[in-house]
View 1 (cartoon, rainbow, N blue to C red):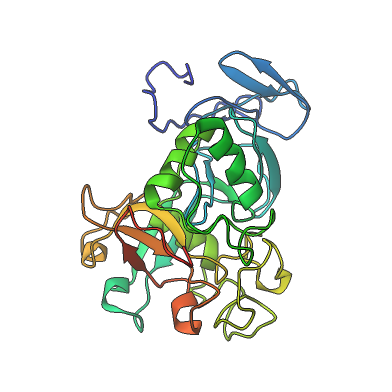
View 2 (cartoon, one colour):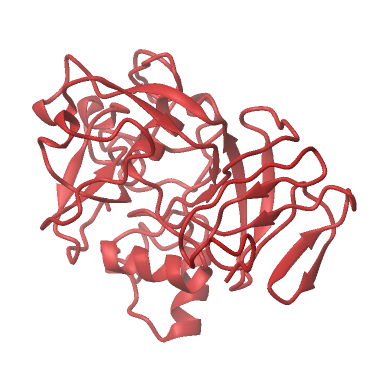
Length: 308
């Protein structure tokens, strides 16, 4: 648990910026410093010492999706990294994740031409955050399974889907959430996921408009999932891979098809309850319609499907 500021409760975001030498970034669990570098473990805080005078306190706030995509919340940042800049994070559980930065600010969420649950289009203001550059792999997920004695993914024995660098697949929302808790992370919100995929220009897909097999694994054109990061032409504006196709991704929010009509304009986290959770991004088996950055799917949180 992060101990500062004193007013911050466990699991609750905080935001304070006292100049370049004292940045604070929210995240739940341990902390890392304000800039990548050699880390030393200080008990409650893991400090990055490349810039000894610029140490930040950080709480992990992200985790996996159906595959697992992880978000590292970045509240107030004075040191001004560029959008899409990358850091490598070693979690309290010992797993390593490359993450890209999505800056604070507004974006237009939804699609006027999409399904009814994508309307109305509305402006959402988000704090800055880091999110996984790649989907969580089978190799990473197996560390969690072996450490906790957890259940294997549904397709762990299927040779089409179980190589080390393919995205883990056949996991429920509870599996994904369990991975997050073990690693000291959390799932991205629905809004965080969409902003990561389409940035601020309202694009249809992470790369822009139009779709072809050079940009993503979709439409059963490969017949299986592909190793994460296989489609550099399909990368999002912030540097995240495979946000369209390959596997569906769980996000944190409960699903309500009317939610956009009453959603808060700042850092929305979805309905307070529900029976289904939101999935994003489409899969190797879906047509182009399912891969749109604004498209939302919903599924009971205990289900473990072929392309999730």
